[in-house]
Length: 150
Image 1 (cartoon, rainbow, N blue to C red):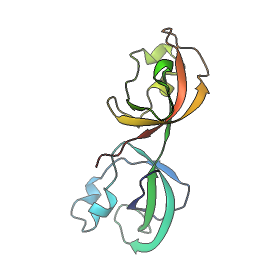
Image 2 (image 1 turned 90 degrees about the vertical axis):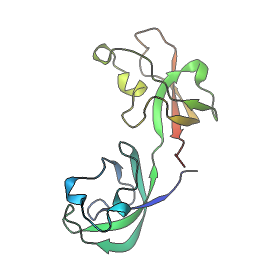
Image 3 (image 1 turned 135 degrees about the horizontal axis):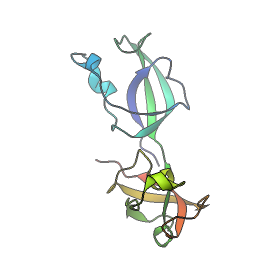
């Protein structure tokens, strides 16, 4: 089960199903009395809006202000070594060392919203990668759920 967080987001983005990567606060956030309600997500992580609230606030950054929304961190499809691909397993994310300039599946092994060392659970097995690994690794696509820091 994904942890639901309440945050504030621009009115144009405050729709169920919208996905976004949280990039952190900007200089416009300095001095804002409600900024802790906006910057309560993890920088660089991917989220989906799963619910909206009627709470509205003015915001110098977002034209029209912000609404309170319920968000969950997205699950990530990633290629990992087949020997580690066991549904329900807890793993420490460790992407293979390879050269992105010559690999067509690099982004599957190195998703932007996962960092080396992230603690994850393999939510489900997805299947084979669209191409073989150029370094000869046997890879499998899995759906990872990052364990939230408490």
